[in-house]
Length: 129
Image (tube, rainbow, N blue to C red; front, top):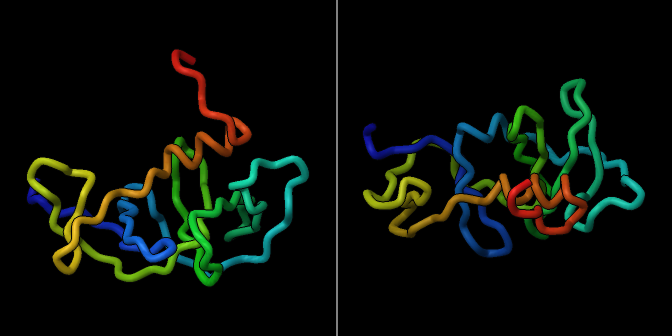
């Protein structure tokens, strides 16, 4: 391991976050959304992206770009962040999930947590299954 990780640094409501390349498959313009009645508040709706229906989750207030991620074998769109830079970033020796960008420590965005909240209807997932 060379101490570097590929991915996307994104600004979410003024705060930097990192989405690793292992999750982020592309950055696309924000799509037209279709609301889902009864959906949890974080789920903005669903969108058609390259022939697939993708649930789209809010991560912040911005609405110009969507980061398309793959988690648990499914696509998930993230809207609300402004892409600052893509590439390979140095990791901290004791924290592989934190990268350095322009002298700042940038924590990884919790895509798994976002996915879980949408799947559980906004309620915390129960421990033990």
